[in-house]
Length: 317
Image (cartoon, rainbow, N blue to C red; front, side, top):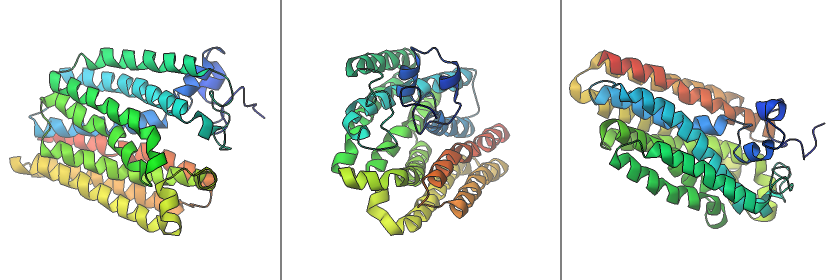
């Protein structure tokens, strides 16, 4: 059995941080959730959607786009790490009261609040270095996103819909990457962003069901608690809205150019993502935390499915 000082209870067993990272670095990497990369993927994926779809809408890919892929991945890792560190700083007392989170570095005493603040600033500073290689619009969008990052941890204290704030922050890359590629944020990018928010409402409501009993005891709000026994119906609605908005983004991006084959290919990717999510819903048991976590993690694969379809559609266009 792994002790609280050695690992975080809800991290995947045998993750690379626990096995290979230097002992002194482990608490900081755990603050960044480097032991569970799903969050980095979920932050990165909307940017990949945007780049692939923008390539079709804006006349193809450019040599600069390779840097956008690499830098977006690095930026997602760093900003997810900084955001999670900030979240743990603001939630350190709440985390100490929840069984699943008591072993995290701050409530378990592996790091101090001051050390965590320094680590957060270091990650954000490295992310800023990447951001400042982009154009002025993308830089401005990146700066604005900090407001969402700062506000999100407090959302569960004043609204039953903290998942909306997470969606606003986690899908910002759809706007930022499109702006970095094309120097503008057209309607297709906004529809893509809205679709990503609906998707976040879907997967993070599932995630929140793991903690609904502890959250009720300590007064933390979430859509899982708000929806209660009606959650499955809401999840189906968020799923449908996700596919509808992503499909609309594809149509707005491709239809004006009359690129029928490109349009059909891109829509096939959205449909395939929808099929994957429908299969998730068939196996989801909201009363089983293990099932909720497994389905939540499955959204990495669901989100990646449209990317090659969108990229091929851009090439066809």
